[in-house]
Image 1: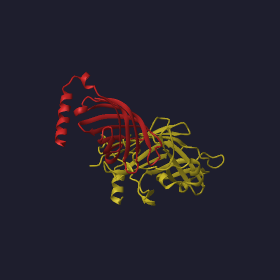
Image 2: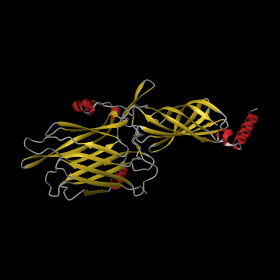
Image 3: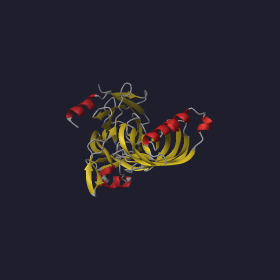
Image 4: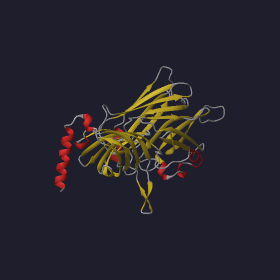
Length: 247
Length: 147
């Protein structure tokens, strides 16, 4: 994937923040992109979101996200997640302890927490890992690993339903007596630069999994994405993004 | 000899095509066909495979296999047999989706055909294995066919 392809995908993004109601105290936006953005070809899907408040204060903690994406994206046919990782193993030992063929993507996150009167930040590495399937659906485990200033790892899980990801976000305690940690930014890519292994003529051979298959036709108006966010303070917010059709 | 046989099959097909429906459903046979199909093309969630088939109706087959992440997969298929084609569809359940070669199984329905199978009807089961890496399919169809 070259720089031009990255740019093509990035400039095709169009994110729109839309608080769901007057009571919403969090503003959210999402981003989505394909790299490469070429109809009928395998691609990597990047999804991201930002959470902020109008006055720049610490947002309420995120408790859930429902991501809606085009159901005709070939995630089931992507060849990603050819092995599984146990949630407990991922939680205790990290994604590096999981089979290479279970890694479905990577990303990063930014969390904020109150260290009165200051707001401190922590970066986390995101790993998207195939978990044991449930009811016949592929399960996606999402691990977020932070190293500094707090060493911590949380693991979330969601079923890869056609066109939908429903993620419950666990609360991460901040400092004693302080508010919970607030996730304010996540960027993750399903597919992309991954290395899988297969047996061929008795040897272990590395290969790059194909990735998500894009339809040959672009939907009217482009590929539509939507996310519904739920927060600890009871508020909800919705955001949308469209990846425009390539010319 | 082959030309004679071909003529005979064409004549039989034409003859069958002009008979009333009740008379056409005279043959009912048990069918068991299987084959390893190779990837032909895709359309995101739709995989098109084809290859040779062996069994009761030897010939070749093409399968349009749809897998969108749900365990409920569908397969439309055509069997190109001697004397005509058989068209069918199946609704299956895919197991172990993380396996490199998940299996699927479900009910199939023969919905029609062409040539000597122009009025084909039938039902049965479709078994298969989906190769997630190279998109190949191994399929086996077992059922009753009337034509």
